[in-house]
Image 1 (cartoon, rainbow, N blue to C red):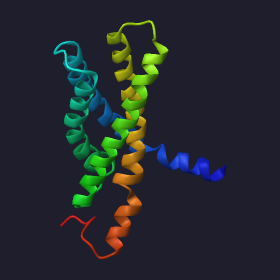
Image 2: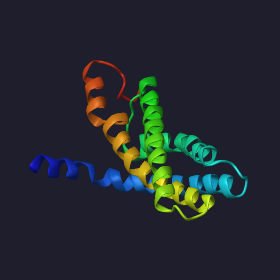
Image 3: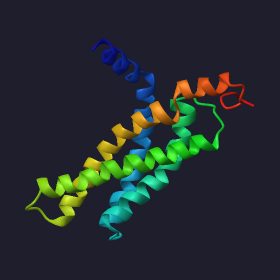
Image 4: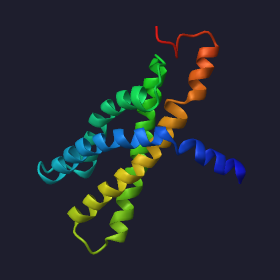
Length: 157
């Protein structure tokens, strides 16, 4: 139990606050994209939500890499980890949100169900994405390990 409490304490810190600040920017931009495409342009649930995450993920990568996690690793593998993290978080969050919203709002219209599903998906995605970026993509342990192996991965060169 003490290990769990220590782990929670290590994840809830200044980096989380910075991640939230970056998330506010991404959420404002992404919400306009996603709900605009769905409600104004008539795009589908999947096209609208995917366009949101494709476009805002590029901004998120740079803001979180340099501002939130202050990570200086220069590695194509890190970009691939980031893209994989975004994809997994997106598929899990939105894949779970849609059937849950459809089930919970059985009597409601499809538009309301899918708007609520997108809102729930955004919340799930945020939690999954923070953990993935912190523990997998921009992990301090990974950066220190690479620096210790004599690579220039974490050095400003």
